[in-house]
Image (cartoon, rainbow over all chains, first blue to last red):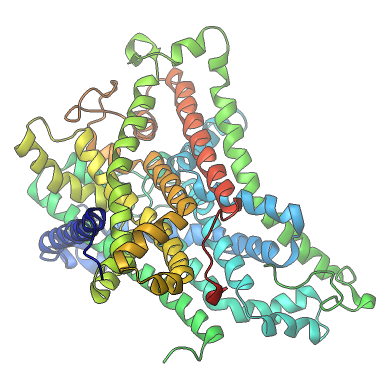
Length: 297
Length: 311
């Protein structure tokens, strides 16, 4: 074997340097988050000085805790999921099973383009919608939980749709031929053969979408997230959210306690999104193993 | 490949009971078709809203006023060029940092690094995709900003800090795409390279990387798109002064941060029209990115070396 040429040696050192830098950056980030966030984690972080039971039941407002923000993010994710999951799954089914030829390419382009739209533009879209409503039918329209959930749903719709389409299209030939061979019509085939077989992949996409919905900040800051509003009061009210709380505290913290709360909230959010990411990968892996099984020891 | 409900004889459904017969099924298929349209319709609606609300700018001298270098809402000057320049400068610099770094990480993961370490690096990169943008922004504001302030002076909220944070954010996007392409190319070229007696470094540099030229380009385009579209990193780190970017230690404001700031401070509605112009520029940029990616996916694979053994 010849001695490595200079360009090869350069590539080797660059590869080590790049990998080292990446690992160091992530280690620093996670390390500091853990060091500053872990000591803060606890009931105090959630509820501040309010008794937990009163806070949970909404009997007393929480001022120094992130519980309202957690409740806001949870309702946002559930609401956005309720809007985006049925529509996204239906969209994916249509793409994978029913749409054909140039029409399918066109629909797929739509999904790709929507996936590429920056989240701030989804927020601006929601904001424009409110401006339009104010000038036309609803003078009292204002940004709210429902609007934010709608915009977040648009943001995550492509994830669900592509995951559904990919899971259906990735099914092995025997599963795809099963329905037609039994004389099922396409709709029966989708309902009783294809969807159950692809369920794990679709679930993976849904979990991924939940993570995306929980972490996005740009959309909600234009469509109704505020600081200090307390528990979400309804679909048309403002709400608090975990990512927005972190952003707000980073810019506006006044006491060290505020900053501690921001570290705690950041660590909590990171833990949530990491768990969701792991869940999505596990769901996806089990799908792959189920249909491509046998080649893994 | 679509799931087989093609009209080919092997999979066609019995002629007598086609899908159109049962009313419930017709309804279901209509609903499905409607959902299929949803994504495209949303894109069109977003474009229509942005275009409609920036329409006032095209009357009179509105366009000249918007395409100016001065953003002073109190004096009625709504020029967005500083923000456009800020977006371009910040994305370009972050991309310049992230892309070589991404290629290095891919080289490491595809054979230059020891295998267990390579797996660890890829696991970390996948973990990075799950880190919320706001957490990146917050951690960078708390850790990177003081470092920059102490080492180089200034407030620390500047172009350089934002570029570093944004580079970290775009890195996984670049690495994951390029790594997938390089793995595919490597599998195809493995036998040839082995037969020629190439070392791992020679194989990657002279065979695999050249074979994934389109992959490199796609990763670059996608990474750049990620940089342009992000809001939180510039908003939290770049200082946000509405001025043209002048120095790496100076403050700048991107289009995305500009939209967030103006909507949040709820200034007079005259500012809104120029806001939608910012949105339109962003939208068209990401549209360009996506269409370029699509073109790349369609492009012929080029002159690939195909070893006879694995074809």
